[in-house]
Length: 526
Image (cartoon, rainbow, N blue to C red; front, side):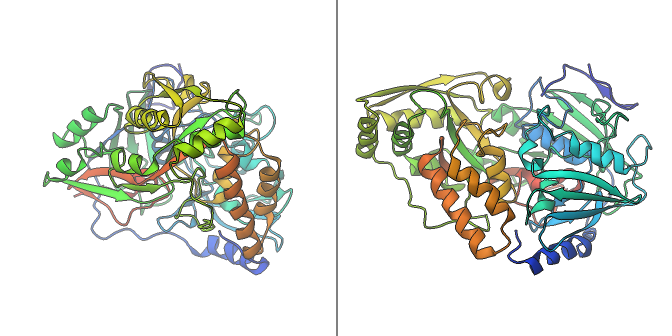
């Protein structure tokens, strides 16, 4: 059982762009200094209790930043913890624990100035040791963190005086501040021995964690000494894990909660008729996919993977699963919301005859594969798998839909079974999503796919400061993933969530669900 800084209670088990030239690199450094604080909205008032039901969370969740996987954990850490940088509503990197940063002309050396006077909720000052140990927690061969690929390019981290951290990289990184916006990169107290104390739940974000019952509830109180008094308008927050979409919807309709995510898109129009409820559908980088393990026969044959990609009716899924709240995908994660989206990648279409052709190229007349799914993967994932089964049958492909429990899906099914349903929230930059989910050997490469040319381009594109060359590299990488990768990506899904009319908000961020999952600090109550 984990312990949290008093008076927090915890129950349950523990577990689991923009630079085109060198001058632009310097411009990014200036942006980190000049963005400053977003002013408070005039209509927002302090106080009250906000109750939010999330379609995520499981009994194995913990406070360990290396293991976070689902939206419940993301919302929890963004309320509890501080980060060197965070993604703003406009998609830019904004200062947080770091008040400014600057880059060398080649973007290989980055200097971050830490905000003075910050404290953790326990009253302990935030020091350079806390920052360095928190970043190092995700580095090295012994780290189990999914953020490992993001910090792998860091060669050395050093102190410069009492308030500055210097990062030396193996090569230039045009988007480096965005690395620290990843939700795993929370700034936690140092344990004094080079590690971090994540078990205490002692954060330096806008809210103090007072109770955490994994898979059930997390409760928070506003941290009155937060460095930024223009955020954190709610006095107390109760976040519930309600994976069942009907129960979650009923809780909102009855007024038991003030907001829910992962709407049942079949009934969203009916829910929207309630005059006390607002429906929000925000396009972004989120995608729903089926991860085929490219290290497991027969899925290790690219022809089999291509057959599976041509055996799915993408438009049918957009129509029947997303009900129009999204767009058709093309088996690679860089959608329209990304800066370097390549519109020239040929669209893979539903074509049973072409799927049969690729089966024959693989030496097969028929194919049988088991596809595991639960609605914890994404809303209506089991029905999506069933639709996939029906369309694939016309291509002589038998998809055995294996319905598995919601609880434990991310620990027991995802990346364990040979073929499984997945949702990805996307990332702010091409490098982050590619490094996290597609790089060879990455901890969250859920198709276990590796491609030497892709991995070569991954490193080169990260360091390239010429925007035209960078666009060309990312364009080729999208082509490689679409044609060779192990991810069947049929659809990009809008962020679809709902709030009661008593919730006050501004323009929504689109990098994550529910206002970038920073609703705890941005919303208030009327």
